[in-house]
Length: 179
Image (tube, rainbow, N blue to C red; front, side):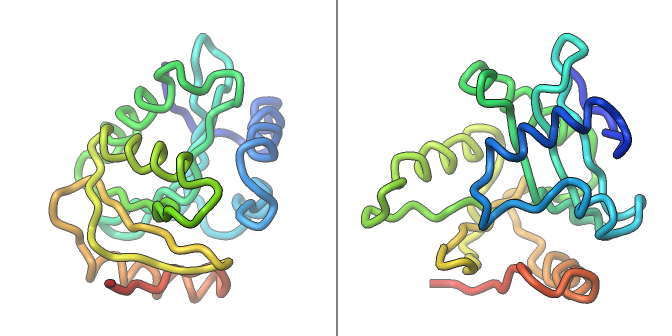
């Protein structure tokens, strides 16, 4: 397995488009084409997850100083629950050894129909080296838990990143709070 940059005009990107469609509900999804043009190549990486030379998933990572914001992570439906996500996340951490990777996942909630899914996703990240930060964000009627790849969350660095992000993408910006 390996990660490599996914060129916008490639056949592999078309496969990633299909994975994107199946992995995210419309209210949470942005097209990959929109993501390519949302920032400079120095600030955003769209990485294909390759297994046996075939795209089986992708990451979209926004880079700002020592923060790497994992905005999107998807694995093809037919490849899930086979360890590919864990392997890919390990490769992502190896790709950015001197940075803190920050991501969000839906906060588990016993009152939600998809709570079992939320618990599985949380447990996946925690099992694969992420830590809950004690910080949350809220958008699209959903609360998200902020997690990071280090035991101590670089809250100041993340706030600087979100300030930058709001200057280029004014909607869907995490606003941190504690419970």
